[in-house]
Length: 173
Image (cartoon, rainbow, N blue to C red; front, top):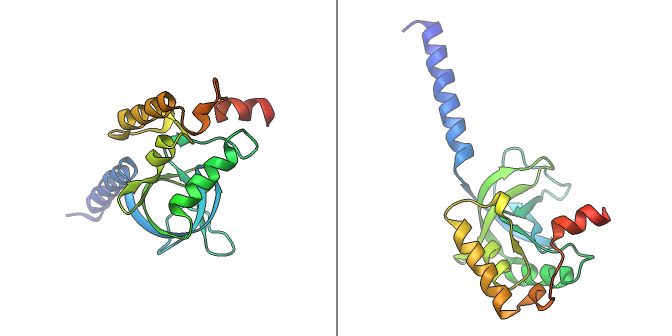
């Protein structure tokens, strides 16, 4: 095989590999050091996650994929933070990394003892299912959990018409 053909084959194979990596979640493990709000925390990863912003204390930011929790200044924002803190605070969690966003945050489905923390925040009534960023097989499960939390008036659903965080951010930021 000529060098030129070998380069072409290598580039095509690399492209296929990198494309498949971006389509599927890859696993990572980290220990949660600080919960920032109802859908974001810092953790100390076992190994470097490509593209993730590393803070001075060697932690990274993790954003729960497919959910949007109230901002801290919103009603139930502090409750959402406390709920996530109770779920993952100080614990070692498994991440199914979907991407690294433009801020260098790792966007992932987060699991603690086989419990999907993203889904649990919705079940508890402390987050909305965020359609734009949901993947199969989670889409219907997350929406059903939100429907049940609304029906049971859990968490933020105690309010008649709570303002979604994406509307709150547009209005107050």
